[in-house]
Structure formats: structure tokens, C-alpha cells
Image (cartoon, rainbow, N blue to C red; front, top):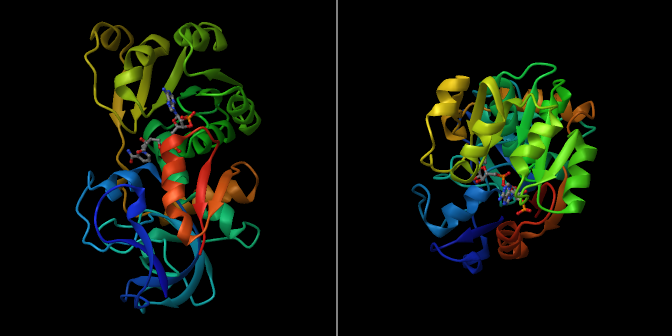
Length: 319
Ligand SMILES: NC(=O)c1ccc[n+]([C@@H]2O[C@H](COP(=O)([O-])OP(=O)(O)OC[C@H]3O[C@@H](n4cnc5c(N)ncnc54)[C@H](OP(=O)(O)O)[C@@H]3O)[C@@H](O)[C@H]2O)c1
């Protein structure tokens, strides 16, 4: 089979397409014929050698969608021919940028016929992250106000929709007028410019001065101070990334704020959360946005485009 691989860590030009043996699924795995997969920011770190141990040569790709080609004897829920979504591939094992991938049964969920592979291939990791951050960790409730930094990003655009579909009032940020318009279409009641000098005041204004119950943050060093300013009493920050900056402890105590980190590597069992996410997709409450698609020979460009940013949603790779 064909697989994208890199034989050494480095810049995006390390990728090549190799002919390699098709993997055999272990008893608790399914062999998935991959139809689509997505690029995630952590892939850039792993490729560069800055995140975790991988044995080289390595196949990139942490999520995707495809068809079960064979099921290990311990996987009872799935059988050959089933459509599936994949999330949370172990980076030290083989990834999803290959014609076939052996995937633990705990990291797949059945994909409804109505959801195209390309769309499903975009949502595995970001859908699971947005769901876990907002539904599981933050426990958002109908009527809550939620601030999503970077609402046009992979996680951000899923988070805006997960929060809106839960009945929350979503304030988001994005970098361009076009992205802000799209984020509002996806369910934010207002999308603000993340570069604005008066962002905190604008968030407060958007919430009638009340502030937000939850902030989803992926740039903690940049935004913790703002988060503390715009949080309502008892509010919480769910942080996906970033160092904890020096910040005055005063607002923490004054508002009894919680700062909660989330690391999806600590949530390896993905099936239940994927099932929830796919339910939202199926009923139109979550539309995974595919900004661009690439074939295996174009993964270098996909990594460059992810670094560059400036789009809404996800970059998808298909064989
Ligand atoms: N902890 C975990 O388990 C976990 C899980 C998933 C993701 N993450 C991390 O969360 C972050 C987001 O992931 P992702 O998949 O959504 O990445 P992504 O698709 O690259 O999205 C990042 C978004 O951030 C926006 N952004 C850029 N500069 C910004 C700024 N100054 N203020 C606010 N937003 C800004 C980007 O906008 P532009 O396109 O305009 O630049 C883009 O929309 C990454 O760092 C990722 O590694 C962590």
C-alpha cells in the first residue's frame, strides 16, 4: 500500500510517499481503508521532533475516516465494510496518512451514511477535543455565555458549534472579516477581531457587561489576563495550549475562577465522544468545514498551509 512517511525529523519537505506492507490488525484493532484524514497542529510538532517519541520512519496522521477492511476478533461492534471515523491515533504507532491503518477499536466510531468521508475526516480530533472541553470538562449549560478564542480554527469552529448547539451564547474571535462572518454563520452570536486592542471591552459589551461563564483558550500566555477580565464570577478557563503567564492572583480570588487544563492524550478512549460528535454532525448541528484538500504527494503543502493559517476549519488529506 502507499503511505506518507518521513524518515527523519525536520521541515515539511521531509515527507515522501512510500510503498509499504499493509498493516495487520491486532485482535483489539480494526484495519481501516482510509478515505480521508486531517492535519492537526500537533502533527507539525511531531514532524519537527519537538513532541513525544516516534520511531522512524513514521506515518503521520492522528485522525480520519474510512471503511473497515478487517476487524480483530475482540472488536465486536464493527465488521468489514462498516464506515468509521478515527480519532486519537497513538503517535508512536502508524498514522492515518496511508491507504490502510490499524486502529484500536477504542478509537473508532461508526460513521452514518449521510456524512461524507471528507467531512468526517475533518472532525475526528477537533470534534473530540471540542466536545470534551465544553461538554465534559466545562459542563456548559443552556444559556451559558462562552468565549471561544480562535473560533475559525479546527477546534475553534467545532467548539463554536458544540457550544451553540448546547444552547450557549457564543462569543468567538477570528483574524479576518471573512472568517468572522463564517464563524457567525456557524453559530457564534458575535465574532470579534482577535487583534483588537479593545477585545476585553468588546467581549463584555457583547455579553451586556455580564462576562462569560467559560473561556476556551489555546494561547494562555497571551489571553489569561483578558480571560480573567471577561469571566463572570465562578467562571472557568479551559486551556488547550500555552504557558501559564504571570498574572495577578486578585481576579482569581475575586471571581473564584477555575483554570483547567485539557490534554486529549489523557483521553485515549474516543468511541463515546465520537458517537456524540457524529450525532451532532448527522443532525446538522455541527458542520465540519473543509477548507482545502490534498493528496498524499501534497502533504508538505498541507503542513505549510496549516502553519500559515488564515482559513476556516480543517485541511484534509485523501489518498
Ligand atoms: N490540549 C489538547 O489536547 C489539544 C487538542 C487539540 C488542539 N490543541 C491545541 O489547540 C490549538 C488549536 O488547535 P486547532 O486544531 O484548532 O489549530 P488550528 O486549526 O491551527 O487553529 C488555530 C486558530 O487560532 C487562530 N489564531 C491565530 N492567532 C491567534 C490569536 N492571536 N488569537 C486567537 N486566535 C488566533 C488561528 O487563526 P488564523 O488562521 O487567522 O491564524 C486559527 O483559526 C493548537 O495549539 C493545538 O495544538 C490542544
